[in-house]
Length: 133
Image 1 (cartoon, rainbow, N blue to C red):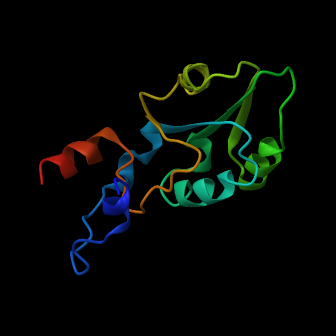
Image 2 (spheres, one colour):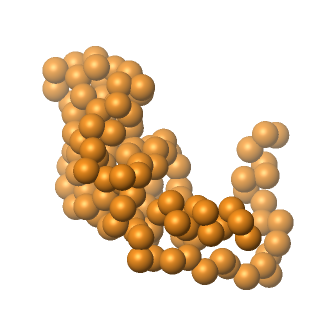
């Protein structure tokens, strides 16, 4: 199956790369979602191990003037930003997220069911450092 390599640890004894944490404040994490009340807590728990809560923006969307579930309540419990977009489109939610996080020089977009690894570089300098290794 196509997703099997994501679940396999090919190098169980490989040392973890050192990640420079000094640039973590320059990247916003944008998470577009749709009816994610039951799912997003796992994503936020993993994200908060890498990003400060001020850098995490959840953009819930749906074709309704009011939110379709309690995703906002879950986000509040974790102290992250929640924005409701009344248009049911992931692309529009991503655009809204980039606008909400416009004060950050860099953004990282992930899905609401994505668990970031703890060694995920969260700033451009870390991506450059890990890609040249």
